[in-house]
Image 1 (tube, helix red, strand yellow):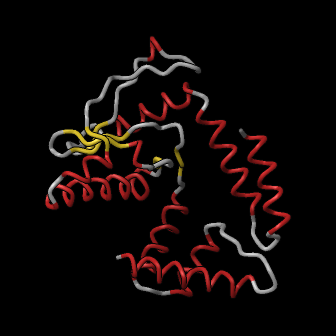
Image 2: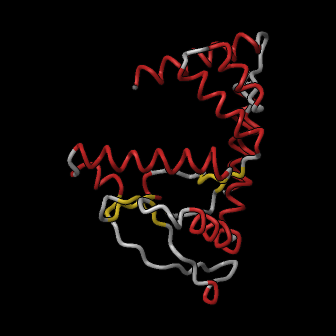
Length: 202
């Protein structure tokens, strides 16, 4: 899979030389390698379980280390509804409560813990009675140092304040880059499009 990704990325890079494909490709390949090591995932799962132990609205499975290895991961079985199914049938008030738990859980991970679940697709969540959020699959986790967390906080502030230039500046400070004849203009155009899409969706 990793070899195929690199071949496809090379073809895309040849067809679209103005895009920076290589950093995203390497990040994806490294993530795939990490997800194959269940010993690492077990350690990350333990960390999330400890950090959310006092949160009544978030559930993380306990790992059974005596039954686990680098290729096998054994955890408690958690009962809950599939996230998309639950959203379809829940009443609006319950949906708001659960989505509030999700927003709080992820802002806590990013800005307080500095360790964030990096694969938040619908299949990695269940909804338990309460409603409470069940978070699954810690094979892809991002660790953020203090400077990165401060940078993200500033970027969110610029986003909410609709400050296009500042948003672009914070993206650059976090390592994002644009290519082409006018990288500054491209970054500003991207930032404006991002802000427009964000507030149009909201």
